[in-house]
Length: 271
Image (cartoon, rainbow, N blue to C red; front, side):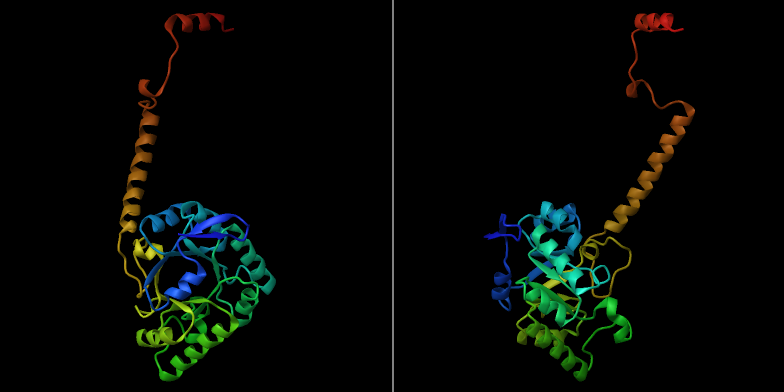
């Protein structure tokens, strides 16, 4: 465990630092998931995962659940449209305890953040919010020309000062070759095992929805549990309504009563 000061000048401990992640590139495979609530962050930490990522506005909640875990705060693309918005959001997230920030913006924004010594994760490959430029949701790097364009995009992000990249749905062999050559710590989301970090959303890992992306695998079935909880909730509410209406609830076990003599005295004093 490493000792650091966060951006609010508070002494902290971290399982990894940005320097550690760079040093481990190509040496040891790490695992990453999402966390946007205290419970999710605690589950990731207690399950032995290495890294978490979540929305920047959830940084404080994540820190409660996983105070010592390397956390990347995502600055949502539509919510922070201007460069100043992004910079303000990044500083706020770092002050709240983030270790790095994620942006799906271009190299000029990455460079702006990197100039402030903020560890920046960029996003290359399939960027779903920008998928109209790719003809829809599909794997990236399926031709030699497209793979070379992607490699050049990695180089531009290196030059801009990014330290890591969310590499999403890139063809497996293309991802492997690029990861070997780039200085960026590559977090593979649907891009095979050739990245430095294997990344998957927590709701996909836990099977929180009945459907999931092709690149995801469910290792649990929270959806079935949620469905059972819905059935149980409805049954409980229906039973409550029935017994409240027929007078069987509340009963003696759920109420308190006054002594008979005191009750009679009370009634005698009423107008």
